[in-house]
Image 1: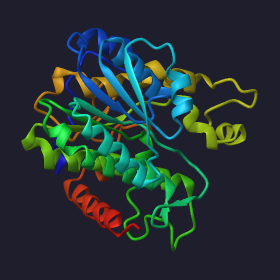
Image 2 (image 1 turned 90 degrees about the vertical axis):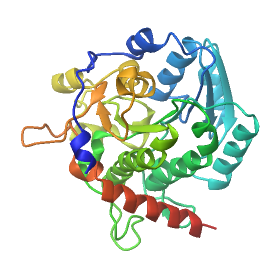
Image 3 (image 1 turned 30 degrees about the vertical axis):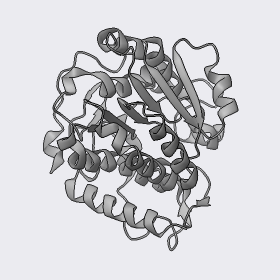
Length: 326
């Protein structure tokens, strides 16, 4: 059970730490390194790219809308390249990966940051539910395709963006694409984020012998374009906003800025405190503890998201789904 590895390190960082804090501590050797950041032109992905590129790393941002990405990244310091890729289209993922590999550049870190949340039912690929397909299957295929570059780069890391939403539920093993059960956008998002955590665990177990380590991240509660499918009325009902658009005091204290939201991603990608470790779920710039009776509903990792057997089951299921896709 990987749950036994969910032991905080006492990293010295925390909830209020920012991307700048992490790069200030660990960014000295980033010049010449290469990172791939999906969704790197919006929200916390944008701040992740800003921090890496500002410290001298070269960053490739694959984007469904390259024009929008270039506009968002315009004027940002550092070496940033934008490429075309749509996680909802496996042919696009394969074309991007082939182009990147053909360039021969090492990949020191792959940050699977892009995602969609609580969206209406949409079917893509082989009649797949889109949240699971975009958040998990697209990244699963991308990571596997970049295996040669990652394994050829000493100390390479993969970071998968999970979420506290995994707490809402496990993988819907018998019907992950809602072919038989009524569609529930929050159940779909929960299983997608559980899948991201299990994917990092499964990947780490498979590739650690080759020197590639993987981590999953809960970045924190952050207002970004990820909420684009939620009406203000729904966010009021969820307690995220007051009716007048202001933030309840508890939310204001708990939610993070995008700069703080990028901190745990960067800590997982860069921190030497994680050398020799992998497969763990992290929050607030540290390894998250396994949830217990005193855990709040928004913190710590639940057992179904850090289970070796479940990670293997998801890996096998994902391979089969992709192999069967047209």
